[in-house]
Image (tube, rainbow, N blue to C red):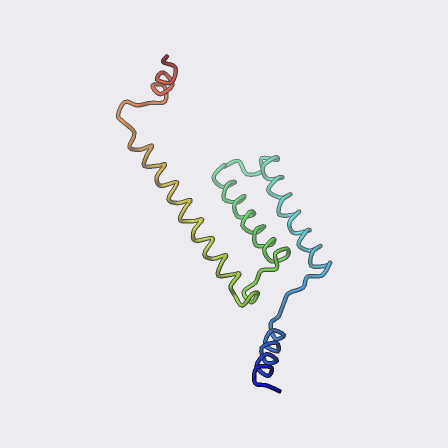
Length: 133
C-alpha cells in the first residue's frame, strides 16, 4: 500500500470520530412542545394583562424570546459546542457581537440626534414645515 493511501485511510478514520447529533421524533416533539409553551405563555401575559407594568412585561417577554431562541437552536438547528468542531458556536457568538454593536450603536446615534436637535425645533414646528407649499 502506498504512503498516500495509508494517509487517506487515516484521514477517513478521523472523520468517523466526530459526533454528529441526529434528532429523533421524540426530540422534535419535545422542541415543538417547548416552542408552543414559550409562545402561549407570553401571549397569555399580554392578552390577559397579567403584568400591568409595561417595563416589567417587556423584560419578561424578552426573556421568553431569548429562551425560545435557545430551544430552536438546540432542538431544530442541532447547535451545540461540539458541532462542526465548535465553528457553529463561534459563528453564533460573532453574529451576536455584531448584532449588539449594530443595535446599541443605532440606539445611541438616534438618542443623540434627538437630544441635539436645533433649539426651538419641536414636533409641531416640523409638521408646519412639511405642510408649506
